[in-house]
Amino acid sequence: MVYNNDMVEHIIERPHLQEFSYCSNGFEKNYKSRIVINGIKVGKYISEIAILNTSSTEYPRIKIKGMLHRLDEETKRSWGIEG
Image (cartoon, rainbow, N blue to C red):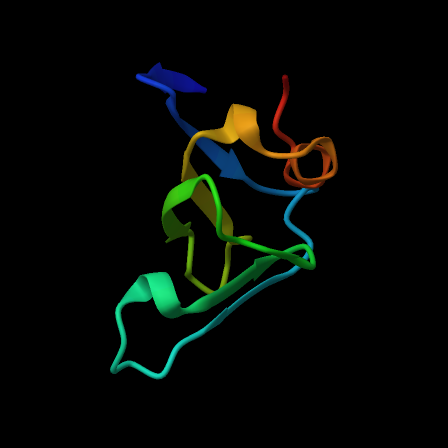
């Protein structure tokens, strides 16, 4: 993890990334989209999400950025965040 004024980046990958869904209508800004990682809706304390490794021969990875220390313990455990 890289610390920068409470904003931290973390990459969720195997085995912690079990399910990911993104739903948007394309006419609204991203903050109104529905993003779910491992059955947990992404929202409060997360400011940025990037989907990595989208080729068919690799496993997907998701980079999240935000105030991860404020997430509840269940979310941290599900996403493989230490601390």
